Image (tube, rainbow, N blue to C red):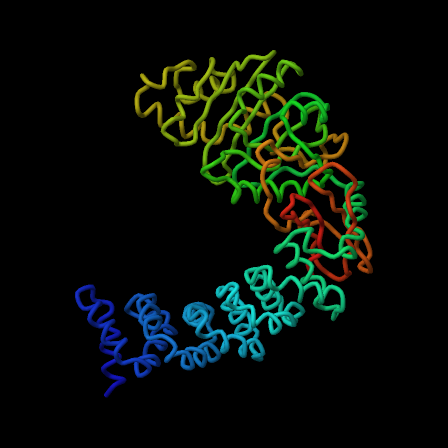
Length: 482
């Protein structure tokens, strides 16, 4: 029987010597093999690796689509849904009509996976845009989120339909439509009405803003013992400073650290320059000129320091400059050229941390024994925050009890002023904060990259999270995501 043969071939997928022949035979069986393959996918203790069944189903192609759809609807365990859903979403453009129809299914999991599959088709899926739009207001949050993400992937072709939703409603779709528009085109994709009140909400939030420690995976921060924010901005060569909340700044810096560094540059596009915090100003900046900048800043302010800390076990680095001269630079990140960056004599805290396990307080890395080198590297990997605290204030310890004077700003680096920033949305409030305004009407701020007054943006009310969008022209505007 075909079923028995398919079962035997599926078992052979687990044998490396028979795998290729078994896969070819299953593909030749076509739709007759699909049900057996899907049973194996749904069975979490299946002997052959489940991804091999997935691969065979992919090669069988559209002839198995209906069986896959039925299995997706019928399956209930999360792991089986994930496996079968992966097959369902992999058909691409040939299944666009079926995905579009499935957007109306009663099962939210099917709707969500269908929206995700449509998004994977990119601009080829533009005919499905009108069916995706109603799902922006879906009662299921995952469905609404998947629909929004899919529309973003469809690109500029959905801007006009989304603008129509913003203009004419229905109201339940408008908040997420605004977020999608901002993700696609930034400020330039928003209407004048949607830019009408952005300034007010961010300005109001700034009046109650509190210092928050950064939580990025990779943190770089020059530290200067001064409250001269304008002078520090000028010395760093930054442009177009825009007042922002701590939550917004941290979100932007984290986003840039994850996705904005490339082979052609090794610095951030945007820098968060904090207000004065316990007498210090921090610049959340990664620059390939950090040595020159710290020496310049220390010549003006007596001292300047710069730190790097990889919160995911990616090491530490520190640089201390006084009166225009770097007195110490040390780097321990696991990279082969770390020792080439060493300058000056060990700092007191470095010596202390070496003496505790019995290591020499002064050392030559080229001559140190391997065991001693390994012990020191392990200790130095997490040392940057302690070095920073010993020499002033660590940015990782700032909080509600930190004395704050002024308002933080996001400013553009010299590199960023010569290029276009990506569209995107960012939080401007901590996830744990309570809403400060009644959920009747929210307003926020929009500031262009170039100097000049911001243009406001109007937002619909409702439960949600506020986010700030960075436009393709470098503008910032806040949007509400329901």
